[in-house]
Length: 202
Image (tube, rainbow, N blue to C red; front, side, top):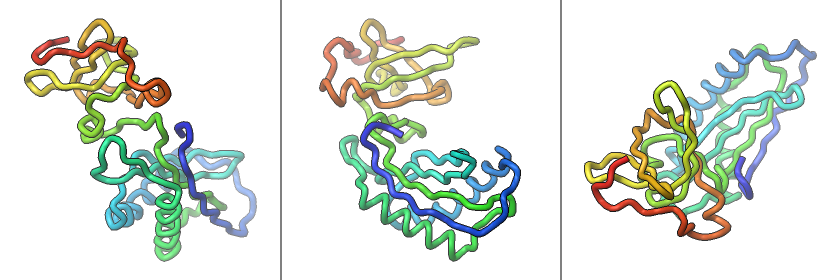
């Protein structure tokens, strides 16, 4: 969760005997079903799912959704009221569907913003945040490489990372992880990160 992200939580309580630790396969299956039920709720509220997780914390499954405004601009942010409203709506849908799993005694539902260091997880994110400073991990042959720079486009429309001393071309499938940099949030635009001229290649 990013710095100063906002969250809303809704506990799900069931009286049940203690069981053995829940397997990762069960958690993955439970999360997948919850995401499917959440889809129509997100669409209706004009929201999008950034990430979803279902870790075990203190032996309790936590169904955690990170949401944002759909089709928003780069400076649009989501607030606590949005998270709380979605949490209530999703809670109602899960209750109405009788959503459960035979191997889960109870779980906690949490809804949060993606935070200031928002992850970029789908192609549309790379359009929304063009020009923003990011930190990335990229596949480079048999090795992985870390890079920092501004998202941009080459003359032929390909994705590039405008780093301080080079312009790195990459495809969406090359990305292992990418997050907005907090450096820019606190210090403003970093002039040490170079800008690529049109047609410049990696």
